[in-house]
Length: 386
Image (cartoon, rainbow, N blue to C red; front, side):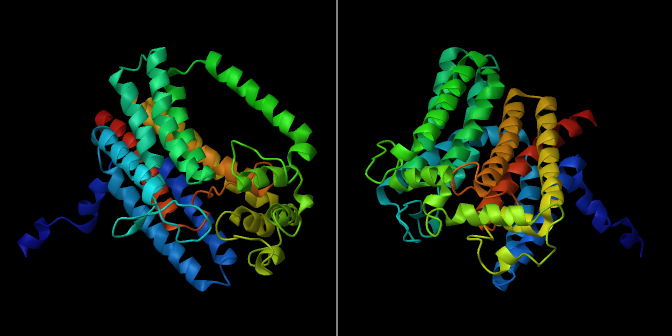
């Protein structure tokens, strides 16, 4: 009887796992998961297996999040070089021996006993590697250090874009770029590039009717990438073909109005006018049913997550953890901005998922891993102060 009193309770055993947790970061993650499962239940109602699988994916991502959050940030720094090296080797092997199980012309997968997508590894490995690079320079990089950091980012980006998978390539590049930015990239470098980009976009818009003719070859882009940009400029050129996705997405978002049509009442969604309504275009399905009010609630959750992540980065005790937290946080901004932009017809369709909303196992696990690293950085500071 006395021995039973000396045994720790279940909460006493579990409590160390939550010690030092940042409650606001956890709240933002759980809120997005809740909204995501609600949207998935409605969008995937005609495919009951999809919602069940998404629940499984959410549970798996949550498990990864909790496990990774227990690992000290110093361990991630030790993994930076080997993880990046393995990821790059796998990308090269994919370029040489990659397979295309979807039969859509993209060799993004590699069979190593099991079929994997190596580009997902680089979403984490690239910012890890760049943060490690600047940590070695004690937070005071020279111009040559920044140039070499850009090389570390460009190599995986170019290999992934070549597959072709421009959406994932953009996410990899963005994660690495923001680490470089937080390391001290000068605005004297950023502003000229931004000006050139704006001028190029204006030129493409003005020259759209000419350069989008079928016989015009865009040397630096694949044909399908040219079609995506031209469809963005004028989706009515092919309303039942290449422009169908954008047109239906905009119709669904607009028809939601202020408060939406109501849960499970989206006609564009349930009459299957919205393509990929459980993955890339789930924001259109969500907007139709929950309207502008629902969109603002979702954007508020993303904003809260990003602001909290940047605060964690600002308070991080080391250069590595500060840069890593900043890069991960801004990756969520890029995810959300690109997905919402492409669904609403502002950006080209590049296949970027909406975090915790779009269906997908690998993407959710990657998100859980990213937030786990962010929580680990937050915990390390809190435990140091306690």
